[in-house]
Length: 375
Image (cartoon, rainbow, N blue to C red):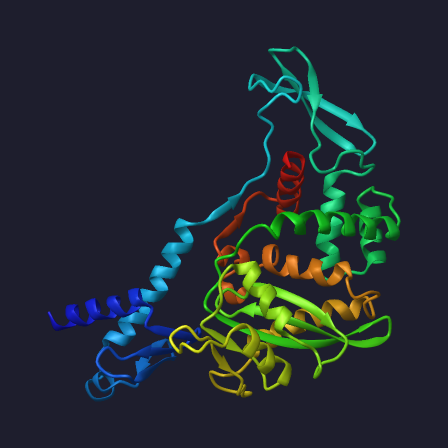
């Protein structure tokens, strides 16, 4: 009976959002009777609380129950609001828009085989190569090139691979493919709002652009590892990071309860502009005392920076500030790269965005082109 009361009180705390998620294993939970906050920390797979109920009785207190309910509620909300992006299937005639269509053989051409359809109402045949119209090479070659490029291969290595597959294409053409389809996919995906958590992390990594030292400032959701926003700056100390935080609010249509950064002055000034409020109950908590060990480390952000740095090394520096490599890799990280720390899921899947189909590149490109034609 007492345990049921604790569970009920924990549920009340979770529903009121009287808790702050700092990281996967660290929460602040408000007391229901005083102005105090208790730390709930997970060590060796077990939640522990600093409240007297847990400290002296060693029982699962209402604050621990609140964390468990909060995690469950977030998962249920994401599942309920899940967005599923499916491969495009041909169901309408392109001439009369009738649904009375069926497959009608294969059309053979130099770029590959394309499915033909026949409409039994207007008696016309047609084929649809959505997203790859007038391309000399088939969609498999294009999507394979993009997968290889963003997983770390150079353009010339991608070229060698495609030649082994029977597609004779220059490395310049491959780069044009990547630029064209990355832009198309980004225009489509930028309109989707990810269901991120309420703890964000920001950090910067240096890169060389045309031989000059630049900095890529990045904003990431701690819970889902979704790369929310990025921008390239000429300097580190003098850069105004408020545009990065503002872009993060626009992308997610929300703001975090916690923002974790290092002690860089740019972040402190940006926090004052974008997140600070007079009302303490609405104010975002800024944690800027990053340690190498413990709960306040920035390991997740460093891991993402390492991903990008490994990719950037292959091309031996970026050629321009708006390079397709930066925006394209952000898209690849979020929607196409499975993460071991996320149980083999992509950050977008953890955010309630599921991309179906054996070839996810193809699914996104088809949906992007389909939406572009409708608008």
